[in-house]
Length: 290
Image 1 (cartoon, rainbow, N blue to C red):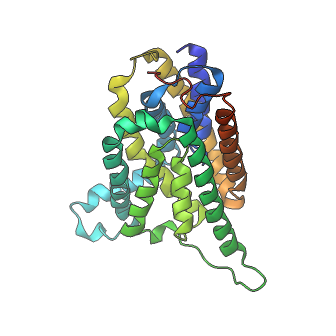
Image 2 (cartoon, rainbow, N blue to C red):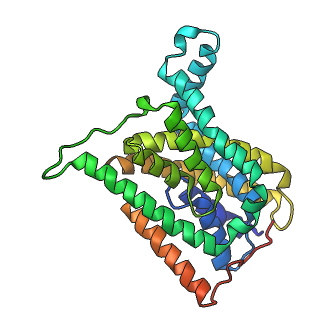
Image 3 (cartoon, rainbow, N blue to C red):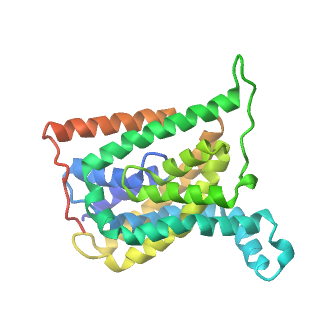
């Protein structure tokens, strides 16, 4: 992998990690369209450490409160009803599904799941799911001629059941094209949470899974055509761009609809099917990258 390739892929990772359009799919597609080798699941997981570092810094106050309250609640029973202490447990519980499935499906994640036809399918299907969830949220927020405005749940109402549902939604993102943020935000909206609550828990929930995945894949860095230098460079680029995207996205979701992302996902999925169907792009384009 050249330094130019790592710069572009790091930029793509930072731009797409927190938007509901799937960063893993876009890394795969960028390589395929440019005629480069697929950077591979290890490269994707490691560059995500950069974007998750941006999450750690952006949400440092929230994370600090949660970690502090969780540790203190282990010895102080009076703190176990504290919201921040409970959030610590909910993040742990919600991380279990992706941890188990990530190890179980490792071979599929690095192989069959990277087929462009599967990516096209997940882009479209999950785009439609996000669109439905977004419309339901908008209907509750606006009300209507014969409907009163319906309140949506804040993050303080998150419970173990909903935390697990979030966790299984996140686990779906092991398939490129699903989108970690898209799946978890859709799940949150369908369970009746506010846009801000769904996005905030989505970001917090991703931290253990992404950092663990990146650490696990470190052993494979530097193998194949992807060397350590370009990987680290791409991770740094992803961090800087990712931080800016988080700040923008958290403001965007308070007043805007997710429909632009829905339309983009569906159109990109259709384009992929057309290109593969016409033989202009192989469903395995660029495969065998390190």
